[in-house]
Image (cartoon, rainbow, N blue to C red):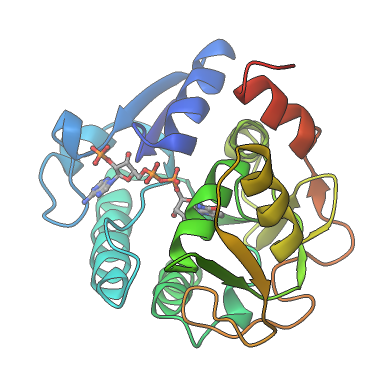
Length: 250
Ligand SMILES: NC(=O)c1ccc[n+]([C@@H]2O[C@H](COP(=O)([O-])OP(=O)(O)OC[C@H]3O[C@@H](n4cnc5c(N)ncnc54)[C@H](OP(=O)(O)O)[C@@H]3O)[C@@H](O)[C@H]2O)c1
């Protein structure tokens, strides 16, 4: 069974490719760096030749309104190429709460991506993950103005990229669910508190301000916007353990 990982050079894609190859699956890591571009269509038909499953873990180079053009064009091109190649399972990675974040241009783009997949005749599995541990620094930077980081004090349940890749590998080799599977980390925090702890640990001087109206990716958050429903698959890695191993202190 040949598997194509679109975005195979990315954070999740590279870990997923390793996991699938460890399980002895023929796996092609595809991305613009290796001559495969879902926006222009370059290299797409050749990459998909003989593929049974395509996993889309690509991401838009920009997180603003331009993300719509990326996800719309790339998903259309990818699904059309999969149809032509006879691919039997399209797996895509999206975000827990996407449907609750429509004030955000990035999440409206992810909604369009999901709708195109659901409306296509190709059997599919959409994995909704919470924010990656690796993205917590990015959340702080995006919420920074001067010396202040303004974040809503809402529930937050991030997951290690390694655990996302593990769950995706399982979904990739299982039959399509034609629906959404939610995955999250094993612990819940408050978004502002976890970012504050992270910044304090590394003596970052920025102040974290709890602001219920602070936007996240342009959208206002409610208490449970970012957390999954009961029954989500949970990763094993705890945030503190991951942080200690990243800092070389664990
Ligand atoms: N960040 C989070 O916390 C979070 C949480 C849940 C879900 N997600 C979702 O996870 C997915 C993957 O995120 P990530 O952080 O692993 O991404 P990433 O590290 O930024 O990697 C993006 C990948 O997309 C590829 N790519 C960019 N433009 C492309 C194009 N035109 N054609 C084909 N491939 C293209 C890149 O290839 P090159 O290296 O060749 O440029 C790279 O391999 C995203 O869809 C995101 O919505 C993210």
